[in-house]
Length: 460
Image 1 (cartoon, helix red, strand yellow):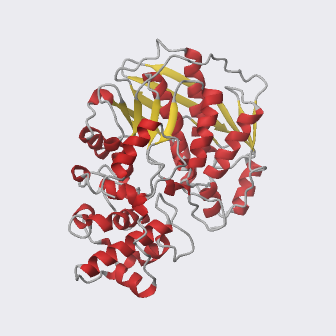
Image 2 (spheres, helix red, strand yellow):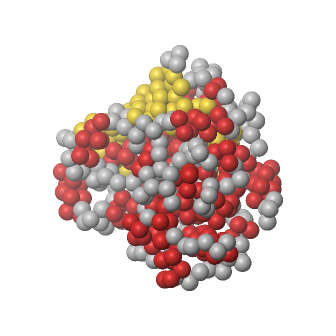
Image 3 (cartoon, one colour):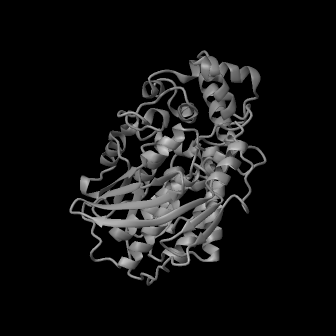
């Protein structure tokens, strides 16, 4: 798709995007945040976040720190609305950013929207795609650095195998620590329950998209992938401050660093990459100031290692879900047709196929001939890697080769996709075990490293 003409027209017709304000409202049941954005002459937007309170309260906290954190949540929320017209000027009225902050946000917005620009055929460059400025009357948010010691964890739950491995491997104290779920479903609530968290220690957040954005999408304005994991980073930082927790544990693996497009920095998972993790930690230390550390517990691992650990966690096998297509209804299901479903099937296959894996998905995806194009893309035989949260070509080819070897050793017939692979591709050498690796490019503390290493290498 080439939307260069639309991109230019929208920017000329709607040259400004305004971040006017935010509000913080505390009720007995919730902490409610609302943001006020505008594309003059086109639309006003009022997205909302609602945090169920449990035992949270703003009353005992430094209000200036709260204001600063909420202001920053607005800075990441705005990108979902800015992308409609890609206005060349973004004007902030409710806070002030210095030159380094502006540069940081421009980098995040640009690479976080890399997939959107690429799939829409938009030739944007990081210098000119937007200009960020603060209105003359924008307040400077003054606040003091918080030095009170914190403890414990906020662990994010997404419903997939990765966050489940973190829940089961990270040394958590269920009387002290919390897990956090955005737009909870029965799957994510069940995962929290199986991991040992009672209702009082599950922070549920409802995120509401303004209907005006949905209208613009239907009317043909620019739409596409945004860096959702960055929103999770800023919101979880806010939650960690509210609860007095020290660590935010997410579950992004080393595989998230790989680009989806050869020779271009276009990464569906940019906001899950180690580069973003490092950038966020630097920014938080300079400008957020609460004693909170954001890190990915699974950063040392690849997808194959995570799958190997998850294969042992049988109580979650009938519960977990990763399919984005199947998450849109009331009941979260595996659609069985998308790249995410096929990748999850492939990466678990060396350990669970076929007897335990097929019942999880409701069918044998390796027999589905309509998945051949996606299968080729996942193993590096297509134009690009699918734009989804999937593993590297190396991991996929290893998993496929190992599964083929397992079936051949057992004297079983290869299903369609594996037969195609055996006939058209060279099996990789599975003697170099990818599950014996450990990426040292991570931000784990010594006790976190020890816990993860013990789980990874217990059967290696």
